[in-house]
Image (cartoon, rainbow, N blue to C red; front, side):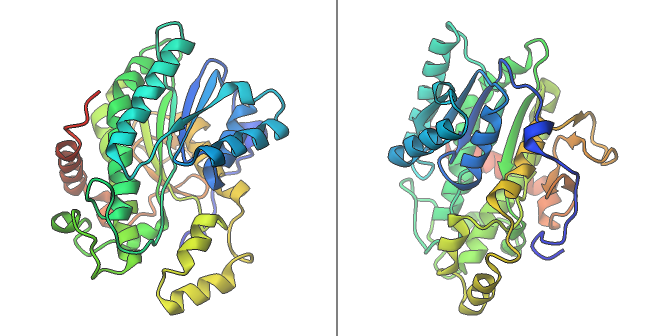
Amino acid sequence: MLFGLLSRGVSFTPETDIPSLEGKVVLVTGGNVGLGKQTVLQLVKHNPAHIYLAARNEASAQKAIAEIETAVPGSASRIRYIHCDLADLASVKTAARSFLEAEKERGGGEARLDLLFLNAGIMATPAGLTADGYEMQFGTNHVGHFLLSKLLLPTLVTTAKLPGADVRVVSLSSIGHIFAPSSGISFDELRTPMSSSLTLTRYGQSKLANILFAKELHRRYHEQGITAVAVHPGVVNTELYRNAISNWPLGVGKVIDVARGTVYTSVEDGAKGQLWAATGPLRGGGSKEGKGEVVSGEYYTPVGVPGQGSRASIDAELAVKLWDWSEKEVSAYEL
């Protein structure tokens, strides 16, 4: 496989294959642009109770909601913006609290959360640190999402106990996880800018963490009714990729820039993977049989193709180590 470009998966058409989402509550990080916006657009067509769009930029989020309203008249009343800066753990904590307060008000005192899309992320950025001192890409793509998930886990578990519940957490990863360090995760350097490492290495490390998080979330919470998967969307022609090109090694950037618009996947197709993972038919257990059925704990390339990850992505000990490390790092941010 070349960056997931040659993968062939199940046929999935969001307009007809997403079942009714009546009564369900959804939260999408980064729902203001690209794949996140497309995900919100497709989901709102299927009558969810409410969608919470978590993003850093309110103006961009409100613009997205207005555009979705134009495409799906009447949808804006079921979409609510929540401010969330994943590079700032205090902001993440506030976002979780805002969601719970808004959802309890909407739900008459009870909050529920059926689908959590950990979609937002940054890619191939210059070396830097988050507000809390983590390597920028790792802190944003993994640590911020880990804290958000941790704070919302009680609600996810409670929702999973409701009659007919189907609770899922979908982490948007990337085939770029193959660029992670040879050790998988450079734990000793996560509180540094990792300036001596290529930006692709830092990005790959964060995307590997997304896969390991999904696998460990499955191991710890599947028996409590939570389905957790990670998804590579394909090489999608989004602003994220376009902005990243300038920070990639010269040769790589030129090749990818030439390919853009010809071999890149559209945003519409790129969103299908996580939409399928969140709404496709669910398979119990851990079997990889049953094409077209979502298996908890799996990593998928487009659409619904399992088992294409690196050796590090299936390292169970590394997944446990990452989870334990993450728990300690965010322990001060309880609600």
